[in-house]
Image 1 (cartoon, rainbow, N blue to C red):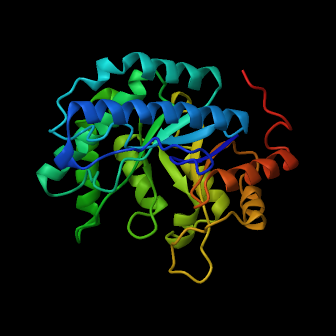
Image 2 (image 1 turned 45 degrees about the horizontal axis):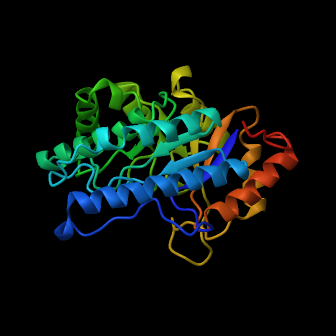
Image 3 (image 1 turned 90 degrees about the vertical axis):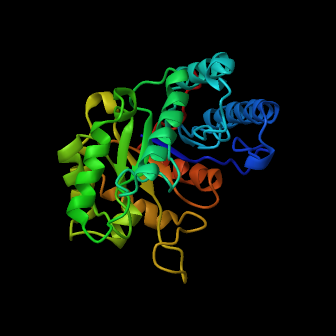
Length: 302
């Protein structure tokens, strides 16, 4: 079992998501931003290894305007050695990696240019993982998209879009159950049509479900993963007290996390904490996992 957090490390004095306005785009600005982002990403990964946090979601902004038509610079070749070196570090230290394209990636949109822009964004983010030479267990997680007043047709459009994606993108794609439109059961239907795995979000399942107990839901999602995909990825969070339904908590509540772990039984998973204070909660969660025997008391640094 691996545990981690998404995109931003609040301890380190750098960001791997430095960007700039489209109006000020230039190749010089792009090279500077990507150089800084990749240097910071390396620092974050080293921090994570030192603290036993072996699951990390990389920022979508590693390459600003990576899928935008304005970016005609061959960043793939220019930064290929750097990406390869980071990928080697990831593999040497047995890190699990994911990315989460932004909400504008909507494969089932009835608007063609939105679908084409979504394809371009997935191609950009997949290229990063390919340049790092990561295997298929490094995933791109997306939501099913909109309902548009007709969920069956929306699901069919999603499946049709997946089928025309290049093999390298389709092999990395996972679909996440959400808290408003697409439940686990909807994602299971998508899986049946596309064979892409389901990334399970416990908090979303609590907000939107079809009555499945948590333990059953976890197993249903796990069954959609093949050996080459790696083990089931989970997004974990809980409700922020006093806020609107579906708002993520600011700091992990260890009693709730401990209770969630009981639903795993013998299931092996990698857990992404979607909690606002990032690595601070991840370190506490890892300590609990070690206390309960889910991970070794000390993690070897390779």
